[in-house]
Length: 189
Image (cartoon, rainbow, N blue to C red; front, top):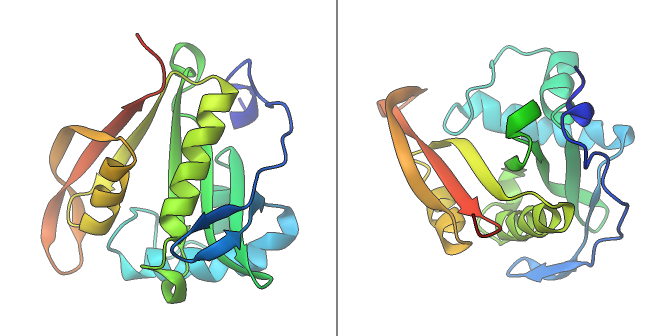
């Protein structure tokens, strides 16, 4: 079943997002990705996956397989600065059927833009989109515990670590490290 049919809210009503502001600068817009964005997204995806520190995607994925893995996960957005894609995020239901009321998301920031607020802009965008779309919470299934910048970022946005799967990620420098499951409620139970 295609990802877009998992949830009766899909597709959500179209909204024009406000430009995001933050440490990267004022007004870095975040917009829905289109197929023509893939050539700009792929180098970000490839560099992060090849580094092997934050995602368990296969390092030898072809360009087409990488596109399917990233662009086929639900709604995809890009953060753009001076017509250059500096980050991207995916979002949608974490599970199909009876689990489709909880969202998930994935984030990648271009290496040259890391540490400049793009991840925070994308995180805020995803949280707001999930709220507006009617999800009851957001679950990140696999945040590498050694990715302390991401863990701190998600915690600062309201996520908590609800569990850690020990040794579930094979880090190229640190060996077997844990994967955090992080959660943020969006409604009262």
